[in-house]
Length: 206
Image (cartoon, rainbow, N blue to C red; front, top):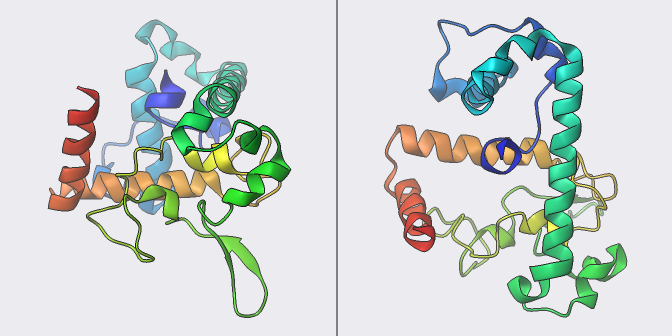
């Protein structure tokens, strides 16, 4: 549950064994520093993990197992999407999601660009995140594409959902935290575009 509802990856789990809640933690600055990310992560973990297991937070073996189980959940989720519902979500043939080579056709959808000097990279704000994308960022359209949940990873050539894609070099964890920062700050400041995103998905799911 934590993997799907909170964080896709743990940030430096080895540091959690000695970490305690900081009194001066500011949720608005959570994603501005490593300390902020760790403090925010710890708070989410304390809420998600039953209190009877909190004493295990000082045990590095606990975090190794927790991290391993998160990897298993990510793998299960991507496999189900690619092989069970992916074709209907992305309106393509099942064979187009079966292999890394086949999924190359979606590289522009998930942010692939070639710079003027010939270097290539995957940008964070990619086409798949937007509803009715028109070639540029629009606050009123981002995170409203019905296909966006785990879509970027599903369509990539990467075989495993890791913090950094082994084939694409997409910085999934950094991008994920960038998206969370965008949404968190929008909620904190009651940005009307961000609030509209939440209203849209609340209406869709509930």
